[in-house]
Structure formats: structure tokens, C-alpha cells
Image (cartoon, rainbow, N blue to C red):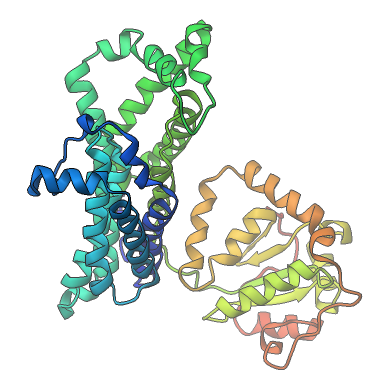
Length: 432
């Protein structure tokens, strides 16, 4: 059964979206030296909307004034930062959108076109527009859901339009002829901030050229059907698996960075995922400083108090280790999550644990789309170095009076916890 992405998204998801959209614009305005446009020949300046509303003299002065461009850059970064902070989005968001429009119009005046920036700009308008629409009480309840779905659709639509244009104007020739190889060699030979230059191999290796053309075909097809990522999870996973590496490859081959697009792939994390309501036992290394900090982090964000913590060095920990046939060496390498009728270890345990947290932290469960082997490789690296990086305590953590309700230290407390209605198995389950 198909389900629209972000259906049922909570209001807290808007905070994450606001920080993403306006945070990206702040970084761009803060670090993009737009004042260097004055170094370009004035004959290249062809102002689009809204700069074309000005007289030629006024538009030319604005584009050629160092002071005006620096002022625009500072104001744009300032209002983007204020909007990202959530300071009255209706008052900070509108000037931020207008400044960003002028900012992008200046860049496009010299022929530059980046559909990643266009999607980001339209998304900020949608976000601010929804903030005004949500003043109507009956629309406020669904504001997060509607905003996220609309922004994600716009993001997908930019891919579809690019793919459709490629098919409409290039036809099959754009895929059958060695055009991609020529573009790659040409772009790799240009002066750029990024000087990877892998594109030159397209002229030197038939295998590289063939892989390049095949990737171009697959990527174009995925672009054309991008909106299906909103409603069909298998396609969404495939889209992310194809397009993210493709953007990285374009950077390496053609020296073109789609960093805004890559950051906005966060939109494919389903913000409509609900917090896990069942109980979970977290078995952790009680003398590890990093593990104890993680437990503190979890407690502060476990609004439903569904997590119960057991240090492996405690009586309760030793009982659970014996029941699940976990050696001291194993528990020293991984955290364990015992939930329902199953037990989990390593990165899967972490994802199961965060699924119990309040928003936006439980959205991290979307990271399960990453192959387990890769997740566990990162986990093992952190686990192997945690004592060296974060230190080791001389004795097991002693919970405070406020923490004791969620800490199980003795066999009696474990049995009382289970008899209270929890369905955690006693023994014999296979660790996952």
C-alpha cells in the first residue's frame, strides 16, 4: 500500500525543515563571495526578474558596486540566520525570501543556472507562505505535513523538469552519442574551485566512458520519475541510492557541486514516523564515559519513559548477559537493545533505541536504509576507540534519585519490570 511521505508529520518537524532551508541559505550567503561579480565584464550582464524592473543604469550600478553587493550579502546572511533561528518567521522570512531572490537574480544575470538553488529558493517561499496560511486554526493542525509534502514535491519536480528537458530537446541522441563524455572532458579542463578533473578519463578509457554513459541514462530515468519518491518507498530508496552517488560523481568528474541538493536529501527521511511506544531495555557498559553520556542523552529525550537502562557490571546486567549468552567481551564492544521478543546489537540497537525518543530524534530511524554492514563499520570504529577518546570510569555509574526509576540494578527489579506487563523474553533469543 502506497503512503505519502511525511503524512502525519508533527509540528516539531517544521523546526528541522526551517533550519535546513534557511541554514543552507545562510551558509551560502556567508561564504559565497558575490561581490566578485564586479570582476566580470559588464557586457555579460543580462538582468532577469526582478532586476529587469529597474532601469538599465540602476541595475548596472547595483551589479557593479562593491559596497552594494557586500551590503546585499550581509543582509541576506543576517535575515537567513534570523529566519533559521525561528524568530517570528512571518517577519524575518519575507525579507529573507526577497533578499534571496535578488541575490539569485544577480548570479543568474551572468548566465549561471543551478536548479539546486532554484528548488531551495522556491522551498523557502513555500515555508513562509505556509506560516501565513497556518494562521487559520483548521489548517494549523496539518501545517507540518502540508509544508513538508509541498517542499519535497518541489524538490522532486526540479529533477523531473531537468530530466524531461533533456529527453525533449536531446532525444535519444543525448544518450547514444558521446555527448556526456565530451561534457565531462570539457568541464574537467576548466578552472574551478574543485579540481578533481576525473572527467579527462572519459577520453582515455573506454570502460570509464561506458560507465559514465550508463550512469547518465540511469540517472536521467530516475530524475524523470522523481515525484514517485513521495508515494512509493522502494522507489524512494532507489532514488536516494542512485542520485546521491551521482551528485558525488558529478563533483569528481565535472567539478560541479550540487551541495544544496545533497543536503536536501534529508527530505526523504519520513518525518511522519511515530515514536515507538513499547518498552526497551538498554544494556550498556557502565564504566564507559561515552556510553554514560549517551544514556544521559537518551534519558533527557525519552519523554514517554519507555527506555530502561541496565549497566553490564550490575547484578541485573550479569543476569541478562547470562540469559542471552552475552560474554563480557561482547558487551564491551556493543550496546544491546532488548525490545519485545527480540534483542539487537551494534548500529541496529542504536536505531531501535532512538525510535523511542521524542521528535525530531526518532526520525534518525530512517538511517536504517543505509546497509547494515556500513552502519556497523562506523559503529565498530567508535566502539574500538571510545575509551581512548572519551575515557573510562573506575567504577560503574550510580544513578541519581531521579534516574533510579528507569535503572534496573538487581534481579528483583528486572523481574518486577517484566511482571508489570513488559513482554521482554527471558532467554534463548538470537541476537540481531
